[in-house]
Image (tube, rainbow, N blue to C red; front, side):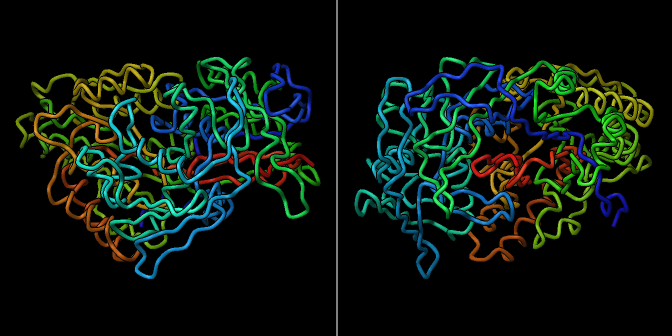
Length: 564
């Protein structure tokens, strides 16, 4: 095993979490749930734009963070140990064959009162509506394949308008229903914890559509104080959850998420005390931050502590396999062999990663998935030069300039791109230009099949290798169809699709892993992407913070968080 894999690095998307009880500078509406404001506020700074707050349109983790405060699904994921927890469903029972689940809803769970709409109890009809909406084309719904396709019996027929209802969904009474599945329930139940599977109010949706601001989660969206870059949520005092001693949850008063221009701005404002939590810190400033606050770490007890662990995230470059010269597999393989990932980690990211992605797409986050069995790409310049020559470009002669598109607002992306630019020029005599643009523009280019290389990455939607491999599943693509999320490069390999499907439909976790490993290997053989880094998660946490646990899925559950 590569030594870099065996050590834990600080993650470049450092999350600094310092909790404060000072009065908020941000005004909060009184709200229609009776909340009158409060001073226990968590202020979060992010740099990834939020294009949509509608669950079925979420495509990045910041959108998931925003949606996750306001909405809630049938089940939740315990951030402490990644086990399933009751959400809107207080209990669920799985049949002996593992293919039917009976859910019982809480009778005290309600949708928010907000924006002139009264609070309403959540019933089986709302759940049925949610799944039917997930199976309906339109409103830029990108998660039919995540949640329903080839999972729920009858979902495909409903999507194709061959049936008027989802045959596998049965209402038993107002608070009980069953879902019949095509395959085993275990992964499906984990998917239900993702914000994209949040339960939607049918009555609210009828008027608000995908501008919906009514949820059922622990926090209510403040329509008066919020803007497209400033998201304010105040606690839902009618939230169903209580502690064993009867204490009403959540404990804190509000959560504020701001979208800033770049990570440097976030860091400056954090130092000024304007934020408690920043989602990304420039890697070259980590040492400075720690040294400047060394007394806070060495106190007894320390004011701040470091929490670090691997994340379920892989960062990679997506290659445009449908456009010359990257439609040549030898060119793609040459690029993969020419990149020194350890140098990127050590010299550019200052050790802030879990390790180089030299095995495959799926990170080493799953004990039962032996990702080291996948043969990926490590630095081998001689092999890279031979492959490029075999492709018709000896020593890079006549090779066209490549365009690399990176997400704006994050110096980390630019620094990595600059290093790869140097490596490809020095190793293969290939010229690369890179350009920063916002994620929406970059995403549009990918869907249109333009551009050459794109900064990409995948945060698991649910804790399974399947989530990563679903990105490149092409069984849903038809010849001549436009590219679509998440398989933006329209990669189609029949053998890959077959192994992915076998893993998805497997009856056990171990048998699923064997098929997923084969799919992962096929993806590496075809060199559709350049895997760069398996990410790690590092947070600096205030010692005042209680009941907070970081999640490798980059979700933040503030329901039980409080300040000592």
